[in-house]
Image: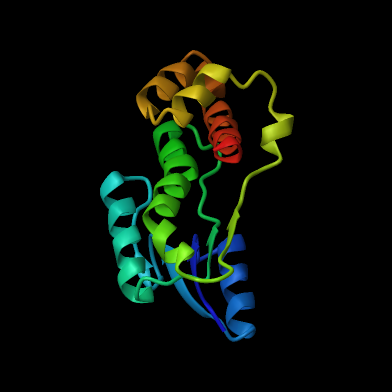
Length: 165
């Protein structure tokens, strides 16, 4: 059996993944803002760095897989947190765990995206390109142009960017 890291492990789809993996006999290192093996706030750079390091310490430098299920929906006023968790929470953790995933023969990675990548109209390419370039502030400036529709645009842009990454 293998060792898997799962973000968003305390609730929703992440928790369902944890239960399934454990039922199959795998060891799971859950990451969430509460009630997890690794408690971390993925909406902050320090939280992501800490989560990356804590998982590496817990797995001894070998991960058989990762499921990145943590995510925030289009909540008003949460554009920065949406961007940080949904995009940078995926990219930075996978970069941190890259060598641990490569240390096993057949590591598997699953990243949860959204049908918003195909259903939200007029998601600005500028925001997606900004995320892919690592520029959260530029993406946030783009979302603001959409006023009250900024949160859904932030959500869709973050999910599209993670799909393209």
